[in-house]
Length: 107
Length: 107
DNA sequence: CTACTATATTGCTATATGCTCATTTAGTTT
DNA sequence: AAACTAAATGAGCATATAGCAATATAGTAG
Image 1 (cartoon, each protein chain N blue to C red):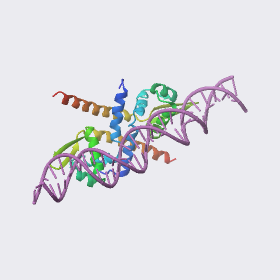
Image 2 (cartoon, each protein chain N blue to C red):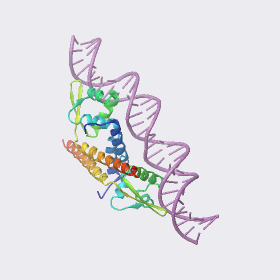
Image 3 (cartoon, protein in one colour):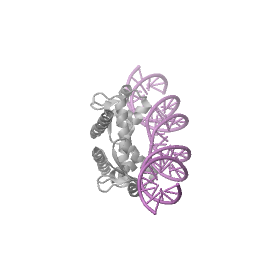
Image 4 (cartoon, protein in one colour):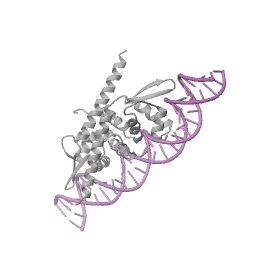
C-alpha cells in the first residue's frame, strides 16, 4: 500500500463503482449459488431485459461474472467469489454504523 | 445473506459508491497512518479546498472518518479501519484480472 | 426461407454528482 | 472591533450513467 499511482486509484475506484448500484448487487445476490440465464434474472430482479443485459455485460467485462452460451441462452455465474467477501465487509460496516446511531439515540 | 431487502441493497450500494471516487481513495490512503488537517490534505492531494472539504464531509457523514476540531483546524482520521480490508480485497481482484489478461496475451 | 425467441446494442432522457468559484461561518490575533 | 485564516457551504456547469423503448443480432424450429 505504499505506492498508489493515479492509475491504481482509478482501477480501484472503477471496481467499487461497479458494486455501487443496487440492481447489480441484486443480480450478484441472485447468482450467489447457481447460474442463471438472462430471462431468469429478469424475472427475479423485476428489471427490464435491456437493463439487465447491460448490467450483466458490465460485470462480465469486469471479470466478476462468467458467461456460458448455450443456443439462444446466456448463462451467467459468479467468476470472482471474493465479491461476496467485499459485501460482507460492507455489511459489517453498515451494521456498526447503525449500532452507533442507535446507541446515541438512547441518551 | 438470505434476505436482501431493497433497503439493504441501497445501503450497501451507497457505501460502495463512496469508495468509487479516486480522489476519496487518495484521501483515505493519505490518512492511512496519521491524522491530517484539511490544509495538509489539500496539499497532498492537489485538489482544491472546497472539493477536499466536500469529500471529507461525505466520508465523515458515512462514518468512515473521524473529525477532531482544534481552533480553526479540523483534523481528520480513519474511523473505520475495515475500509482498508476492502481496498486490499479489491486490489487482489484487480491483480487477478490483470494476470488473466496477461496470460491470454501470451498465446 | 420464414417465423420465432433470447440477448445484445443503440439512441435517448432524466438524474446524480464531481468540480470550480464565490461566499459564509467560526475561531484567532492585534 | 477589524483583519485574518481555516473550513464549510451554495450555485452553476459539465459529465457520467441508469433506465426505457426500439432495433439489431444470432440461434432455433417449422
